[in-house]
View 1 (cartoon, rainbow, N blue to C red):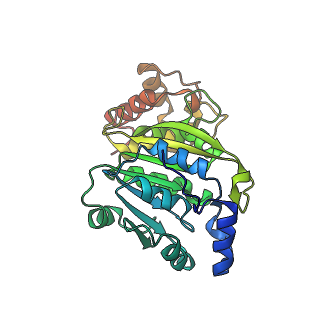
View 2: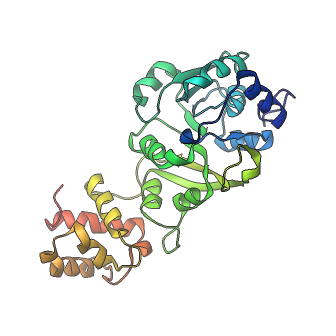
Length: 298
C-alpha cells in the first residue's frame, strides 16, 4: 500500500494552502469536489491493483490529490484536466513526479486511442483511476467502455446511487439499462462507500468507488450490438409497464403486436414480465430473435 509522506495533498490543511495560494474558486458547473482523506485514496490505489509495470489514466485530477498517489504506484500517469485554471496548480503540486503528464482537454472530445498510443505506448496494462464529476459520470464511463480501449480496469469514485445502478442485479429496483450496458463490457463491483464529509466543498450525497474489470469479450453472443442496446433501452422505457407494453411503445410497430407476443412466448419470456426482471442472456435472446424474424433491421 502507498505510504503517506506527511506532505500529501489530500489533507484539509494542504488543500486549503494550495487553494489560497492560487486564489482558486470552485466551478459548480464542472462538478469540482476535492478529496481530503489520504486513507480513501490509498484504498482506491489498492483497488486498482497498480504496479510500476502498469500505467494509469486519471480524468479530472483537480489539484493532484489522487494524481500524486497514482504517480507513486504506477509506472506512468496521464491526467486529463478540462479546467485550464488548474494547469499551473498541477504543474506546481506534481513537480516531484517525472512520470506524470497532464493533458488539457475534455475527455469526451479527445481521441483516446491516439492519446494512449502517444503517451502510454510502452504499457500493456492500463487502468483508469479517477474521481469523476457527477454530472458526466455516465457519458465518460460509456465512452471508456464502448470505444474498446486497451484497459485492464476502471476504478472510479462516483455518486453512490449511480454506482449501485451500475452493479445492480436483475429484479432489484436499481437494475436498469445502465446496469446491462456496464455489465456487458465489464464485471462490476462496489468497492467502498465514501461519505460526503471527506470532500471540499462537501457534496449533497455520498459517493462510492466502483471497480469495473474490463471483459475481453461480452458475456453473451449478440448478432448486432446496436440492436441489443435498442432492445434493452426499449424494455426499460417505462418501469411500471410490462415488457410487451414497453416494446410496443416505440421499438416495434403496433401492427406487429401479435408477432412480438409469439416471439416472446417462443423464446421463453412471458410478455407480462417487466424489463427489470430480464437477465442479460434474455435480452440477448430477444434482440437476436428480433433480427432473425425480421422485426428489427440491423
